[in-house]
Image 1 (cartoon, rainbow, N blue to C red):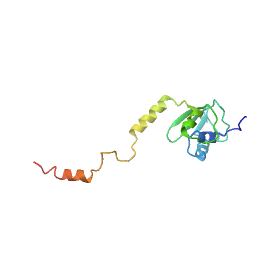
Image 2 (image 1 turned 45 degrees about the vertical axis):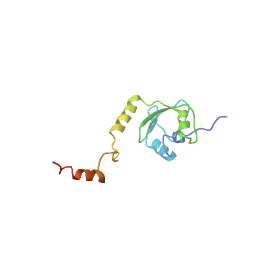
Image 3 (image 1 turned 90 degrees about the vertical axis):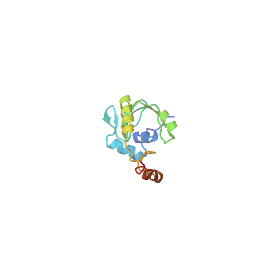
Image 4 (image 1 turned 30 degrees about the vertical axis):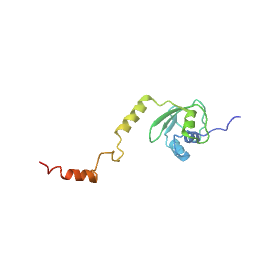
Length: 128
């Protein structure tokens, strides 16, 4: 039984590159999804063997379609429907970016002293 044509936005949502289908559609409209360096529309049919370059907030993906998936499934199942062919230099850039990224959260054991630390520090300068 042959399946109906599968829209690109639905496929990108189903393989979990985007949280919502509308985000996938918006990315297509804004030119963040490319096939052979050409922008593609959200309604474009997906075929096995297509290679897409997808730019999300987190990273720039290169994915090769290995199987069609028309509904959202858990991550472990979704990764079986595409092959991640992202270049190694992009993966290195992400690792470097993650290493220097400041979340604004205080690291454990650093930052403002606790009440106990303050008590310990009060007498520190007074001792001979």
